[in-house]
Amino acid sequence: MRVSVIIPTHNEALSIERVLADLPSDLTTEVIVVDSNSSDGTPEIAAKMGARVVQEPRRGYGRACLTGLAAANSPDVVVFLDGDYSDRPSELPLLLAPIIGGPADGPVEGRADIVLGSRLQGRRSAGALPWHQVFGNRLAAGLIRLLYGVEISDLGPFRAGRAEVLRALALEETTYGWAVEMILKGALAGYRVVEVPVSYYPRIGKSKISGTLKGTVGAGWFILSLIVRYYFRQ
Image 1: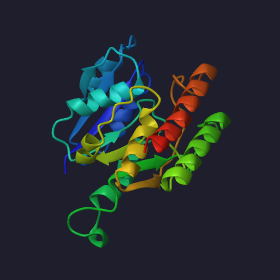
Image 2: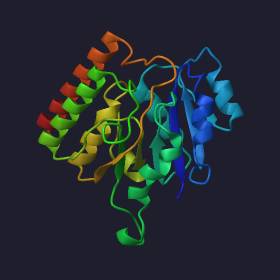
Image 3: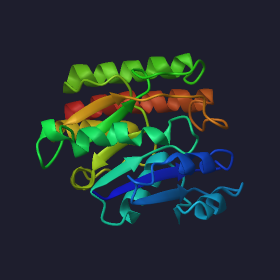
């Protein structure tokens, strides 16, 4: 099972070494750090730690993820992970288990095509998620449950998917919508989207989205409107 891990970064020099060091080497085939114009030495640190660094000068979280996906070398499963050490890379087996499966799932595959790590169902450190981010995630997840029938509680960034499924979905959102597009298109196409609890901690450094009022409001509005637009488009 070839597993490619994609980590978008922008000025994560304080955390990227810890993120890469904690990834289970026995489960990871390759690590791709997609860097967006970092000025603090992030790509140099990542390369020193053995990651393959891909430069993506155009801003946008979704764009970085798409660039990493295009650069991945024939993976079976693709994992997306933030570079701020808020999620714990050592919990990678939790995300892979529903996809890879075990004796109870049958010899070929597990019970999921896309797996989301839920920060709201797992162990969360005090202050790791501001109240407005918790509220926004619960609201978006509730709307997805209502309109699409997918039982999720969070839109966390730590997630994994079968590579063939991600390619079939033709993902295209380049900014805030990346977090939800994969879920909506996956549900509409009949793929199995499941959620597993993951722990969550205060990020190292300042968030590019939830750390500002403009970013929080912009991301929230974009995601909620995208959920409704996809539903009525179908």
